[in-house]
Amino acid sequence: MKRTIAIVAGGDSSEFGVSLLSARGIYSFFDKEKYSVYVVKLIGSSWTVLLNFDEALGAENPNIEEITLDKNDFSFMLNHQKINFDYAYITIHGEPGENGCLQGYLNMVGVPHSTCGVLAASLTYNKFMCSQYLKGYGITVAESMQIKKGKVTISDVINEVKLRIGYPCFVKPNLGGSSFGITKVKEEKDLAFAIEKAFDEDEEVVIEAFLDGVEVTCGCYSINNKKVALPLTEVVTHNEFFDFNAKYKGEVDEITPARISEKLTERIQKLTKRIYDILDCAGIIRIDYIVTESERINLLEVNTTPGMTSTSFIPQQVSAAGLSMSQLLTDLVESAFE
Image (cartoon, rainbow, N blue to C red):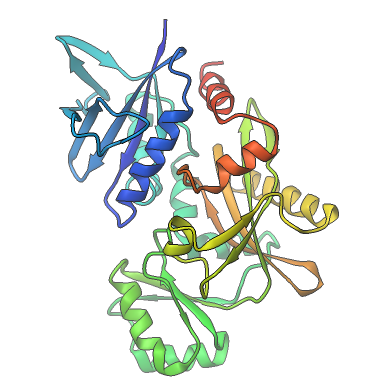
């Protein structure tokens, strides 16, 4: 009998559209001969199952029909029959799927899912807290500071940036991803505007020192307690930094495997596995780094629900490793029932 899979997408952040694109990619990867696959769309309190979701059009299919999901047990009715989900693949980038809330709910209703637990999800979602936590384990991170809306004056922030961070620097929302609300600030006169832009996305903002080097990203997953670090991707953006246009509109060169030495590659893969363990991650994650002079590896960000669109890193890295996304997802699902 086929297991019934929910690909949970949407969410309550600016990354709603990106999440639905990821759902489309994941839907295409799942083996339909083994699984009955549905996309569940979350928008605030509205949780619906999308019928007639297909690989070509995704959620834009004009024949899409939405059925309300029963949140009491994560089920829905179809043709007078109750359908219970056996497994949830979370691909929400942002709230509530990346911050631990959805994980907690699924734990309560007894549905296994694809990502890490509540604590790891909430910690990694908070960029500043995660970097400070990992710093305590000797992981190298950029100098940074956190500010909260309404709690500081711009003059105080300017002074602290001058003393601790310097220019250029990055100003970004503390929560969220896909480079929404991020600005590379080169001069003090542009700092206030960048902070306001970031505050439009979040109540907390991180100001981080710019690091000049080679940007790489490494996917990692664990199945039956065996961790696998994937080939690295080198990110060469055509823009000032790896912004939304670079990520989703092709304004970047993504080179897999990365053009770095085998020894450095192995160091980064080993570090990725170590961070995976420190944070008690699960499923597929991706960690971004900047390699600066003297091959110093600097952590940028931990992504516990990495993108799965046609332009995303994980499918590229899985292919470079000689693996298939379909088999990887099958192994991931089945490991939850062993």
